[in-house]
Picture 1 (spheres, rainbow, N blue to C red):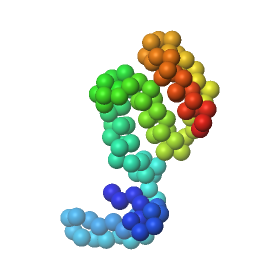
Picture 2 (picture 1 turned 120 degrees about the vertical axis):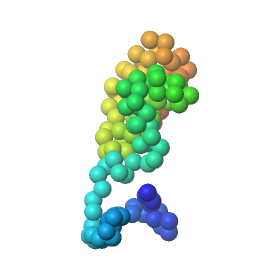
Picture 3 (picture 1 turned 45 degrees about the vertical axis):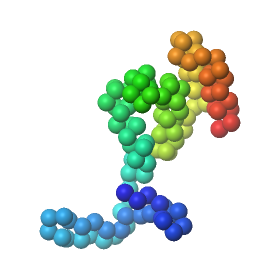
Picture 4 (picture 1 turned 135 degrees about the vertical axis):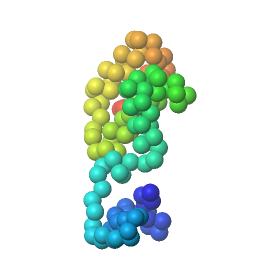
Length: 118
């Protein structure tokens, strides 16, 4: 699905649907839900996350990325869906990951910097 205008990069809107079976067309202005506005990459990530039943560790292993990178992807999806990421909760999560050995001190430092700069 094309998400942005190829001319000006503006948001595209759905204005018609056509039946593949009988050819009936319906025109109008159709609002998409917030999931339809996610990128293909974000949708694929959500699908994998659900298949792994929310295990950040297993998602990271399947994608070949670190635990903190998976966390960052989750935060980006939350933001794309219109949600907000609680900075204090994120700080606590990072410190818990450090405590549990999921990340090292340098990774924790970088993640804390990212939160501070948001």
